[in-house]
Picture 1 (cartoon, rainbow, N blue to C red):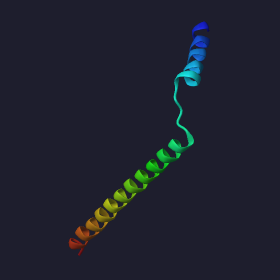
Picture 2 (picture 1 turned 90 degrees about the horizontal axis):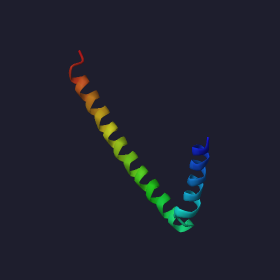
Picture 3 (picture 1 turned 180 degrees about the vertical axis):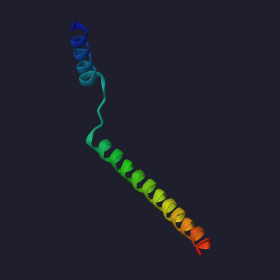
Picture 4 (picture 1 turned 60 degrees about the vertical axis):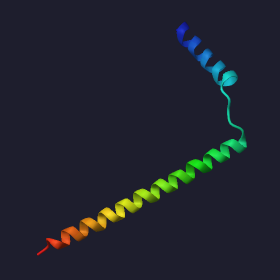
Length: 65
């Protein structure tokens, strides 16, 4: 049990005294970068899905009787 409480105390000290937390402006900037990247990747995946779907529909229509 002593090891566990020592671990908790050390973790708390590290989070409070050693970790550098971003300020509000850095946090907003990072959030906008993540949102922009997420939207861009979502758009790329949507386009790839759209093209693949329509390609497969076209290929299947060639072999339809």
